[in-house]
Length: 241
Image 1: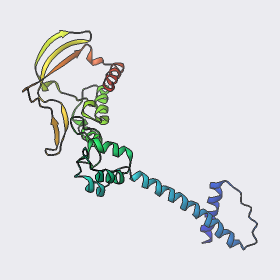
Image 2: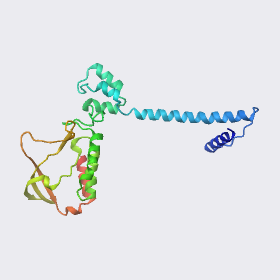
Image 3: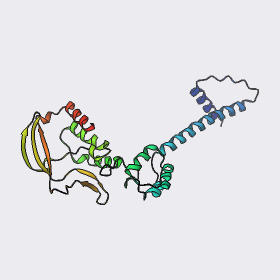
Image 4: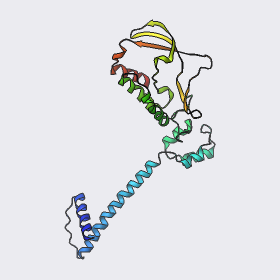
């Protein structure tokens, strides 16, 4: 016990960088007890702060219990009682601001990040995109990075870029020559991603209810193998705008 006590006292002195010149009228063991008490009191404060910090961090999500209580609410049409319950149960303003217009994600049970035409959950969808990164490449690492970052950060379907293989287009027809390359029109066999379909567990693709085919415009850039970072930055700025 004496050996452990000395180690504690030395550690305390080193951490506080103070020289203790204790002049007590009490026995030496009382001084040791005081130092031990001071040392463990400081530790207790640090642990308490850490617990409170972790507790606050853990509140930045909707718990399963809260989800079960509000999952059947119509988020876009809450009565007064439901509004009060939402304000009480959802822990942060950011989560409340997402829940009220966008509702809850069926996957992670957290508020969606968009509901502009189609429901979108950024954390869930970014994970799905990431799992598919290994299955495609443009052949240019900078282009790949631009597409991947858009998919990881997109808060709605309008912010994503997709890599489409050339064989997914048909009836490609030349239209004109522009300043940066040639312009074509074509039919996109598949269509663009709208949202995640939880019934089929796959992406729900756009289907034109008025047309059987989806026409798109393609642009073949001059010297496309030598695409510069400056050009990609302009594309990125255009997307943000």
